[in-house]
Image (cartoon, rainbow, N blue to C red):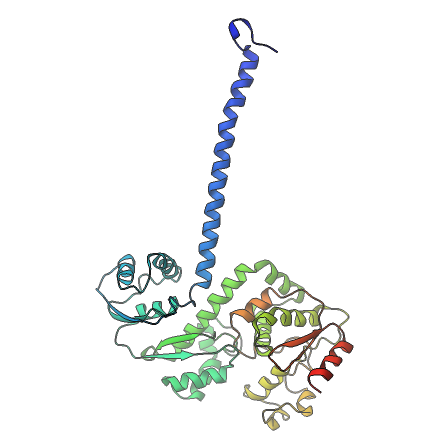
Length: 382
């Protein structure tokens, strides 16, 4: 079709031509908007991941002590400026630290007065210093991954919180458990392994509450990150969140090799899920040891336990933590799992392994059949 007289485009074609011309900038604008939203989402995701891993990462490898005196009434931005000026934080670190403080709801809890910090401290340690009342007696307590509640009670006792028996009793006190939101018979499994700075004057309840809160923060962050996998694992076995913590405590005690934790978690899931695997026994030594050492009420066989598992302990049906005789999970956690173990049970490795045995070097040999497992046992243990 050609133009009409005088080079004019016919009316019908002119309308189509204008419509087409008007759509081009609209599409271009849409693409620009979508691109901008994509970049924004990427930046938000990057920032969120930074915040997730941020609390336990030291600010600097070099330790340099700095004291800043915060005037009364100083706002969070004012405190950040002081920290940047004192070179505790860089400008970029100040941005992440601000997000971290706001996420914790601690912007209004920063106290006035002198605060001494080290550039090698982690963000959570710096925040603990900022909210601490200057001059309050303070102790530093480190809880390693895999410690049970008796070991934690001993560490807190040595730090000055009282007798071990009193602390252990508090960890089992029903009213206190309810106050910190733990539904089990004790705080076992919920005393998150970390390095803490405690105010002795605040008392034992505050210290234990902090540890439980830290566990909850880490657990909830991981549950959001691996929500689909965690829920699928729970549904497949009709588990609660507490069951995930119990399995994580077993995984924590079975290996110190971080890369093996998801695989070992997968082995335990396979034992409970595979129809061909019967009976559903986890057969893990750390559960027997726990049942013979930590509970107040112990079986007759456990009363003969001297630090080494004997045949009588393997056959003991009265030890409710004996996973060689009782199917499924034990009654509750057997230790306090760290982040890697919790992550492993929420997002385990998918495989067909049903057995593993120690190589005596900190790692394990995995197998899918009983025959292959026995061969590894002969090779590494017998």
